[in-house]
Image 1 (cartoon, one colour):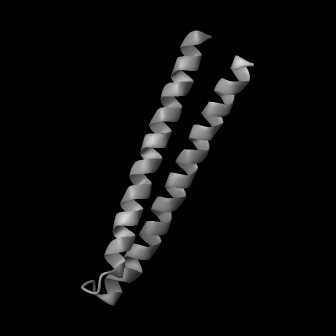
Image 2 (cartoon, rainbow, N blue to C red):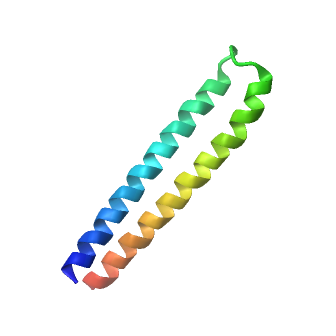
Length: 76
Protein backbone atom coordinates (compact mmCIF):
# COMPACT_ATOMS: atom_id res chain seq x y z
CA UNK A 1 0.00 0.00 0.00
CA UNK A 2 2.84 2.35 0.80
CA UNK A 3 4.37 1.75 -2.63
CA UNK A 4 1.06 2.59 -4.31
CA UNK A 5 0.79 5.83 -2.32
CA UNK A 6 4.27 6.78 -3.45
CA UNK A 7 3.35 6.07 -7.08
CA UNK A 8 0.20 8.19 -6.79
CA UNK A 9 2.20 11.05 -5.32
CA UNK A 10 4.77 10.81 -8.10
CA UNK A 11 2.04 10.74 -10.74
CA UNK A 12 0.34 13.77 -9.21
CA UNK A 13 3.65 15.64 -9.18
CA UNK A 14 4.35 14.67 -12.80
CA UNK A 15 0.90 15.74 -13.97
CA UNK A 16 1.26 19.08 -12.18
CA UNK A 17 4.62 19.56 -13.87
CA UNK A 18 3.18 18.71 -17.32
CA UNK A 19 0.29 21.11 -16.73
CA UNK A 20 2.65 23.88 -15.69
CA UNK A 21 4.75 23.42 -18.81
CA UNK A 22 1.69 23.46 -21.08
CA UNK A 23 0.28 26.49 -19.29
CA UNK A 24 3.53 28.43 -19.56
CA UNK A 25 3.88 27.51 -23.24
CA UNK A 26 0.35 28.69 -23.97
CA UNK A 27 0.98 31.98 -22.15
CA UNK A 28 4.21 32.46 -24.08
CA UNK A 29 2.44 31.87 -27.40
CA UNK A 30 -0.46 34.12 -26.43
CA UNK A 31 1.92 36.95 -25.61
CA UNK A 32 3.45 36.35 -29.04
CA UNK A 33 0.07 36.91 -30.67
CA UNK A 34 -0.22 40.30 -28.96
CA UNK A 35 2.96 41.56 -30.59
CA UNK A 36 2.30 43.55 -33.76
CA UNK A 37 5.07 41.81 -35.76
CA UNK A 38 3.10 38.59 -36.35
CA UNK A 39 1.13 38.42 -39.59
CA UNK A 40 -2.65 38.04 -39.10
CA UNK A 41 -2.79 34.76 -41.02
CA UNK A 42 -0.35 33.19 -38.54
CA UNK A 43 -2.52 34.27 -35.61
CA UNK A 44 -5.34 32.16 -37.01
CA UNK A 45 -3.16 29.08 -36.56
CA UNK A 46 -1.79 30.01 -33.17
CA UNK A 47 -5.05 30.68 -31.35
CA UNK A 48 -6.53 27.16 -31.76
CA UNK A 49 -3.15 25.71 -30.78
CA UNK A 50 -3.18 27.85 -27.62
CA UNK A 51 -6.67 26.59 -26.78
CA UNK A 52 -5.51 22.99 -27.25
CA UNK A 53 -2.59 23.61 -24.90
CA UNK A 54 -4.89 25.12 -22.28
CA UNK A 55 -7.28 22.18 -22.51
CA UNK A 56 -4.33 19.82 -22.10
CA UNK A 57 -3.10 21.74 -19.07
CA UNK A 58 -6.57 21.64 -17.54
CA UNK A 59 -6.85 17.88 -18.07
CA UNK A 60 -3.44 17.30 -16.48
CA UNK A 61 -4.45 19.41 -13.47
CA UNK A 62 -7.63 17.32 -13.20
CA UNK A 63 -5.62 14.10 -13.22
CA UNK A 64 -3.28 15.43 -10.55
CA UNK A 65 -6.27 16.34 -8.39
CA UNK A 66 -7.66 12.82 -8.86
CA UNK A 67 -4.48 11.24 -7.54
CA UNK A 68 -4.27 13.69 -4.65
CA UNK A 69 -7.84 12.78 -3.68
CA UNK A 70 -6.92 9.10 -3.76
CA UNK A 71 -4.02 9.83 -1.44
CA UNK A 72 -6.24 11.71 1.00
CA UNK A 73 -8.87 8.97 0.97
CA UNK A 74 -6.33 6.27 1.78
CA UNK A 75 -4.89 8.34 4.64
CA UNK A 76 -8.29 8.65 6.32
